[in-house]
Image (tube, rainbow, N blue to C red; front, side, top):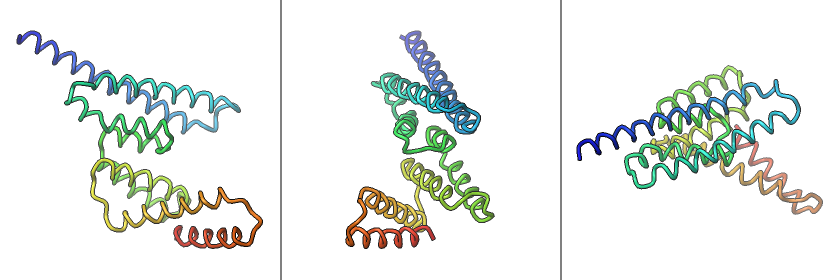
Length: 195
């Protein structure tokens, strides 16, 4: 009985190590792909990214099958599964955020948010880049159970409202005076939200 338990424990540890290695490899691949995007030939980037996304989907399926029945693995890798789903669905676009979320690193996410705020202040990144990445980080923090400040919650709400309004405007055609009024109102709200 003790030998079987010891063997099972060793197999679980080996599975953990293999899962961690594979997650790191796939996230490195995604990160490298984004960093080297400009160096790809036309169409090569999209093809390579689709191959990486297919690998992520396959690994997600493997991971979900692997953790079934082992509650310690389920709790340990639930954030990894969510991170992979977010990457696959393109909800998270920043590989660094995906990695920190998958590894359950709320402190690292907070530090990344602080660095983003600093970069925005010194105009190293655009407002749009800041907003996009800040939303990703705040959603990741929220999903990890971290407490968000009232300012952070308000920012998320503002960005959510602006995006919904922008999507609604995009779906509208142009032409009628009602549509033009809606577009003008939406643009005013979006501008206000971006301030």
